[in-house]
Length: 160
Image (cartoon, rainbow, N blue to C red; front, top):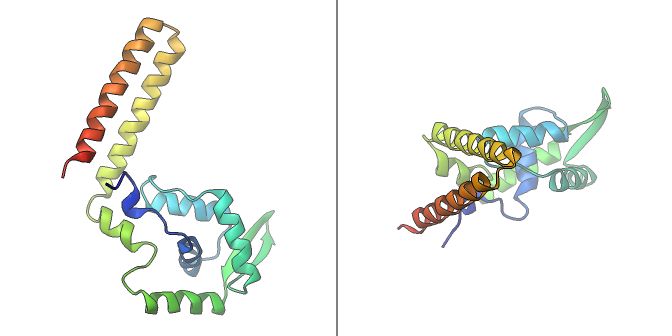
């Protein structure tokens, strides 16, 4: 079966098209591209610097982007060649843009994703508080509870 996130996991090679698509909207630097991707996916998808920066460099070397230092940051701008590559991708696979799978997965549900992320964040904060208390009885009770909840979540994922 497919696990959490498989429905919108980025296929190898799609990152260049995601970056080109973001840069077709406006010039940006790598960190802003990472944050924009995360924001568009409600915090559930984040590109790693280890995949973004080498891809930006390759795209620039290929003539699909150009960059300039501005205020201590390297700002990338899509070139006409980059727009052409993006257009060709859209023509070849019109219903398979890098965003489409994720968009279809969350359409009409972005608030639920944000609420789920917030609940998970709040839970993590509570667990940290228990760990900091140093009370081994509480720590063990919370660990057992988390293991039970994890099993229940997997049971939900296994449902058809």
